[in-house]
Amino acid sequence: MDIMAHSLWSLVLLPGPPSIAKVVLGIAPDAAVFATSLTVQALKGKMQPGFKTRQEMMEWYHRKENRWVLNLYKWTHSLIIWVLLLIPLFAYYFFFRNQVPWYLLAAPLHILMDIPTHDRNSFPVQFLNPFSKFQFNGLHWSKPLVFIGNYVLIIIVIYFRIFVIRK
Image (cartoon, rainbow, N blue to C red):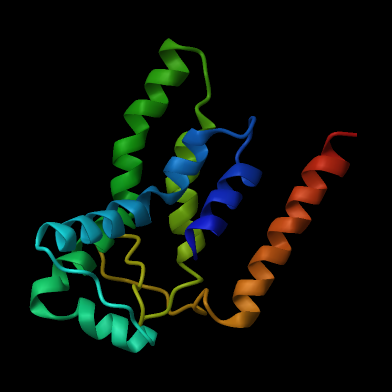
């Protein structure tokens, strides 16, 4: 799923008012990978190529010198890793500050939404990493039906939250 959709889903599905924390954590699994990749390329004095197809992009990431990006992606898209990171934070806020930090769930929400919207050919989501390499072969988010359907659903949920729940 694209980062705009992840941002919007975090804002509309998680309880509480809109916040930058929801947006940042909602894109964190992707930003950690691709911002790092772009930074490494810039430090090498190179530009990341403009890809014409997903296959061309994946071939580039499968090159030996770029394979680390795919490995990092496995870790940033692991529900196991995020649960281990977030349980202590959630417990702290809940028990010591009497707050429920819903925004912390934005990253796991990102991963849950990526599972059915990624296929095995383009950044498959190994959400049980490091314990399992299992991945679901979903419908890629860039397919027109999935892409448009995703934004239609976002609009419906926004409408529902604004006009139905607030009544």
